Image (cartoon, helix red, strand yellow):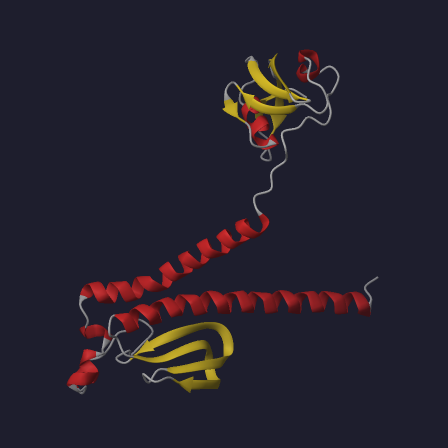
Length: 234
C-alpha cells in the first residue's frame, strides 16, 4: 500500500535529483561559456553579455570592460553574447556592421581573422574537456584506484589451483613474467589461457615459489545468450 510518507520520500528524492542535475548542468555550462569568454577577451572581441541561465535577469553586474554578467530564471543553459551577435550562431547582419564605428568594428567577432574566430568557437568544448580531466584527476588523487590484492583467500577442492599446490594466503606476484598488480590481472590472464600451462610466482610467508598450473576451460553464457570459453583455476 502506498502511503503519504512513501510518496513524500519519493517526491523528495526527485527534487534532490533535479537539483543535482541543475547544479551540474550549471557548472558545465558556466565552464563552457567561460572558455568562450576568456579566449574572446584574449582575441580582442567585445563581450556584451555573460549569462548563466535564460529568461529574465534575477540579478547581475557590469564589469569594467562593459560586460554584463547576469543570472537568469531558467538555469538550463547560458550564453556569451558578442557585440555584433544577431543570433545564437554569432552571426551579424551587414547593416549592423555598417552602422558600427571603427572602435566597435575592432571589437566585432565577425571582423576577426579566421584563426581567432576558430579559437573562440573551440574554447568552449576544450574548457569542458579540461574540466573532465580535472574532475577525474581530483577523484583519483582523493580516492585512488581501488584494486583487490592478488591474495588467495580460498582454495577450492577439485580445482586446478588446489591440485597445483596453492594455499590460502599466497600472494601472486607474476604470471609467466607478467607483473600482477591486482586480482583483476590474475582473472584476465587466466581467462584467456585455458588449457595452457602458466607459471605463477607466489609469495608464501616471505618465501618466493613458482607454481605451474593449467587452467580448466569452462563454457559460460554471456548476457546476450551466447556462449564463450574461459579459463578457471578455482
